[in-house]
Image (cartoon, rainbow, N blue to C red; front, side, top):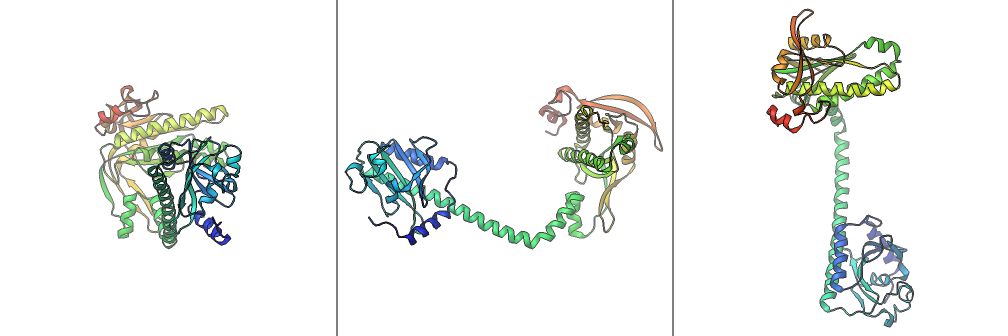
Length: 421
């Protein structure tokens, strides 16, 4: 049998590289083929291997130790198989002039039987083999040899599928890079717009160049700020203060989004978000109370760490009110989405009348959430420029509706009972 020329071997190795398969983890589809080949032929060992310039590497193996993944190609029968266009079938390797002196025959593991089929690529290069081997001489029926041939075709089909997926991914990546380059400026502006505006508002602004103010009959406003923030500004350097404030507000943004609230703005140490707009929904009073509980829980957790470091705790106050509001865009060069109305002013006054670490809500909100949350009546409290407001502290989710001991996480029954599950 003639060895492949150096030019052919260079081309064969280049073809093998297209598949990017060498040293990849085991895969069930290949392992199924080797197990089936061994069972059909009654052999203790079956291997799917690929040949690079120096080694026979096992993509899949049946009947060999887990850590046995390769061997030098010059000592293997498969080194001859890849130079063939067809199956090599040797019932007794010791009786074959070409193979009887190979190391795997004369020394451990002392192979006696071999049947191997080259894995030939669509360009005609033999990349590796599917083989079955035994440690005693063995005769295979024609149907068994045909099974080895067909299983080798299946193994090659898996390799071709891998190559097609790689080629597809490469093409998709190239198209994506071209598209990204062409649309980079537009995408950047759109991302920026969506970072500062709710998505429906951003879309309206992009389509029409303006956003009409809208009256929303039912919203719930959550207003929060940190008590004695001025004292913190006097005890912390500006960089650390801003970093901690950014960390707190960043987590508030996540909590708001998780509870379908829209972050409106931050003003110094104050944080404003709202539910029920720009897209109306029925759950906004519940969403706001859940968000308030989770914000307070986050600050309590952060304060436990601060206490260990003897740092001043953050004291968060939250006011929540339900009512109508007007929402729209202000500004022409620097767009800001904002809300106005008496309901917003009341939410701010509720926050100012709140105790640190608590959530203060108005009767307008309690009406929607009393079934789901434990609330503590505070009576009628007078506030500046508005008058007396009936106020309530929201303490927690009721135990029967809570998934945690602290009463901040709703369970499945909570959503069923609230009519939103």
